[in-house]
Length: 314
Image (tube, rainbow, N blue to C red):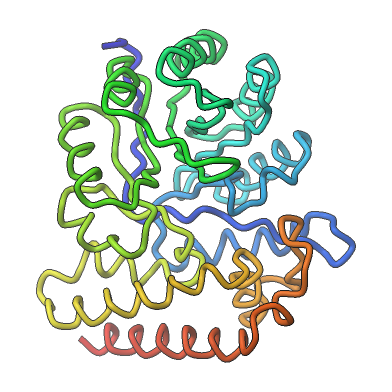
């Protein structure tokens, strides 16, 4: 194992950050600062900037770098910040992207698994590109892995995951297998190493935590990270409420299919974080496509506040 074992630990409740835009299409940095404070206030353990939820595929490299640097600055050491941001196919371009993000001050740099094998050629291509990227990045930079679903979901094989663990440089995997058996197997593979398995799927979130996953890294941390935190950290003494909350969280998260990330921006517009729900990743009117979308959001908001009240009353 590499002697430069990463000191950064990424675990717990880790939101994949949104990027707010003005109606003009420019990044809304005032909204982004308010979002950072909202995450901190709602019991997040770390932040994942410049991810798919951030619409990274629709951001220029200069914007990806500026957003990562801005988040690090506004967090000001209160939480660790990790970022991805390599979206190109050619490895030479990915090196440029990752090196640029590494210089922003983030505590971890997250590699997208499908970028290491853009044409889905298999393990030899993945490993060759992995080692090429590792050799081009600072040896003391903690690294992560992200099974980003776009442009295609590229799950790691056990051998690929073990090869990454054996480098000693990886401290997290954002698991998108959405399969409890796979998560449990990966937890076992990573035992004794710095790498933490962070499940991204709400349907198995609580079960994954009980199976040893080190936290939740799913998109609905953009609505109620504090409820996932309570489920992870405080629920053992209240199993009935935990089961009820887990069911609500699963059902709420089904609405991800209804125009996310615009749906999450609608929520943050309601509470004053964002001024606009403008997205670059979505080129249609979400309210026109998904009828009664505001009514769906009403129920998510009402349920969230009801569970916050129940928890506060304990």
